Length: 153
Image 1: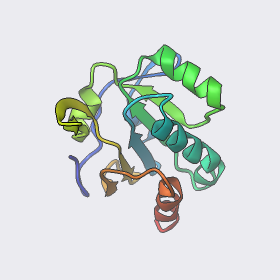
Image 2 (image 1 turned 90 degrees about the vertical axis):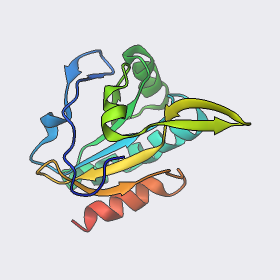
Image 3 (image 1 turned 90 degrees about the horizontal axis):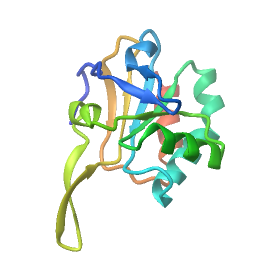
Image 4 (image 1 turned 180 degrees about the vertical axis):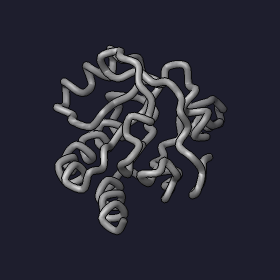
């Protein structure tokens, strides 16, 4: 997993409308990037809603928030519309960004091993270097904790 001081990878993503972009579009501003396993599941929905509830606070500080999963853009669009999400949702369907950040990991559920996205959040500085990492995120209160870290910049 990427750590403090590492550079934010420049890997291609698609937004909820299917348009190509990279995180370089945010260079010059601090940036919050969070990885979540699957759109429209309970934990992922709560996390997206929590970041959306604080979106104006992040925006006032000039800090965009981008949520990344391996969901298809069409699913992200439905997810955003269903819950009125205002944070940017990005599709990493091939998994290249998850690999680059180190969030594509082996997981275990009821003794069954499988590969999946580890819920993690990264705060990058305006220079594109990682300033803070939250691995194995617990959703409750997480968005507020990230906002506090951004305020401390």
